[in-house]
Length: 392
Ligand SMILES: [Zn+2]
Ligand SMILES: [Zn+2]
Image 1 (spheres, rainbow, N blue to C red):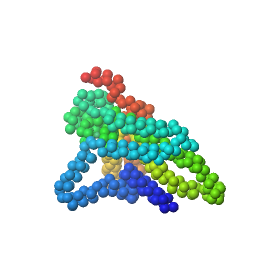
Image 2 (cartoon, rainbow, N blue to C red; image 1 turned 60 degrees about the vertical axis):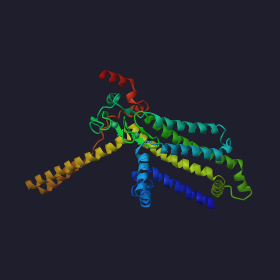
Image 3 (cartoon, rainbow, N blue to C red; image 1 turned 180 degrees about the vertical axis):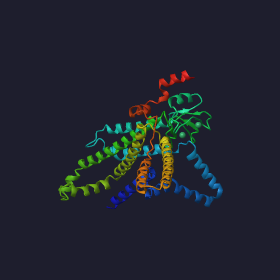
């Protein structure tokens, strides 16, 4: 019973930490303890450590800490890449060590020893492809190619020069301050990949998330089948009913079976819980990015649109209230028919309250074309190469 509770607490704690760390900043968690845990993990704990080091070691210790912080957060570095490899390698090692002796089993054939290895191999390959591929670096040699591929919309992108690279900044590109380069169709800088996610590797990145989700689900199902196989092979149900006299129904057998699994196979259950939580997070992350890809918007642009729409709404609000003020001043001057003017004012106000602002994304060319752009970037298509040579 003790082991059971320990495992439940461990599972809940793991779930809480992972959800808080990865999703704590999501709007649905605003003002909840999940957001507070997220703040503590991502900032509060570090801030306290920094204060402690300043207090204990003085400014010299503080300076060392600042240079470590600069190296880890503001410069390209492989820390998170190594952590990723450690997590995936460690998880696969624990699965192999704890469960490969039961494969082949009652429900799983021996083939899964190899397919699991292949699944992890492809996962690491996608990680390497995303990490070490060119995200679409804009240089003085290729900026015209990107400018012809991505016209300025003059809403969120207008013609300008990158103040660091001193080259024209194509629409949809952004200067990454960590990598110190301009990246075409910039999505975000990914610390796990130690690379920017841009026009040329967004496809690998999407494949990476989807594949990791599938691999985690595969792990959960395979481990569940290993445990189900053990249950069958060891005739647990038969022993429980025939020797211990437990009624042969799901309701009375379930608690005993769960207790037996938790005490005999706790490693597998912990790994299953971990994989299930990670796959849920990956599913959320993939849905978010898939939605962006289907509307041909990048993460960077989604923030730009948010700011633009907010600003537009404010401008419209200001215009509407100025008009309403003008109208009511006019009515005050007109003195006659006070009842009617109230109605007019009512209708006028309701008309003015239609402050709907629309997002006019010129890069959205229908979801099939949008998916096509992710899989086959515009700037490497022949048509854009021809445009480039004509203009140059
Ligand atoms: Zn730049
Ligand atoms: Zn970057």
